Image 1 (cartoon, rainbow, N blue to C red):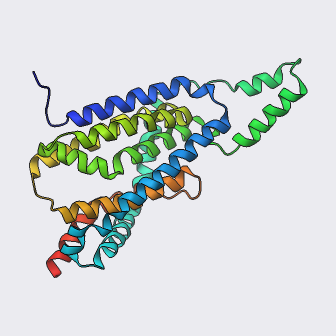
Image 2: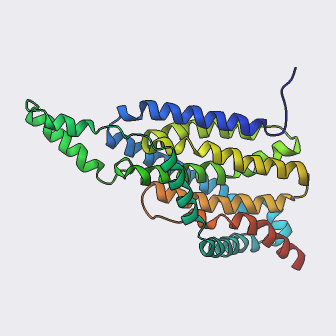
Image 3: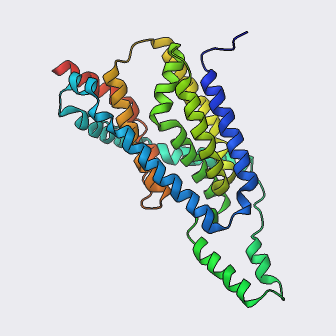
Length: 285
């Protein structure tokens, strides 16, 4: 019997995130802080690369044909501005942070002891070992793993949730799943998310595991949307969503690289504004 139903892709994606997060939590403490920092930097760079590929949807032929050659960039800009203003007024990022804090307080886990601190307390530790430990501490001073437990939980949950739920594969894959067009895109996304969850969890801990709930909710709703609306969204509107999501992914990448703490969650309404603004532009042509 063939197992195929709307939402199967999301189920696979959630399982991949859970397995990846558990694996990352299991092996994460075996790596020194500088290694975890490198992992986070790699994720940031790859996220920015994915963002560039997604943002390139502004050159999509159907998008340009429906709105005009110069309109796609302006639509993305307008969507981010209007969505960002709305999200800021609604304090979406702050509210998500408060929700994450509530979840963390309910499911708090004991933090592992710092092995380097224990090592330095040994009276027979060599001078070289103590010097290496001091260098490790200096390198780790600004590492995400040195944040307080609550802040690390929040950052892990928000960063992983935004990375897993904002990308174009989330939107396109979930809608295609609901439309009955297959789960190929979500299966690909599941593989990527599984490895990303492993890397995130090795740095941020249990907060990444709870991002699986966010994936289930967001992709589940998008799949239902695909089932209900059918072929409602034209290709130009999908391109607008993809390009807008790509720019938001760039913001996540900058956060991971610790370049600037951009409130990407406040920009989430832009994903709703993008197709609406595209509809307005098409109607005015």
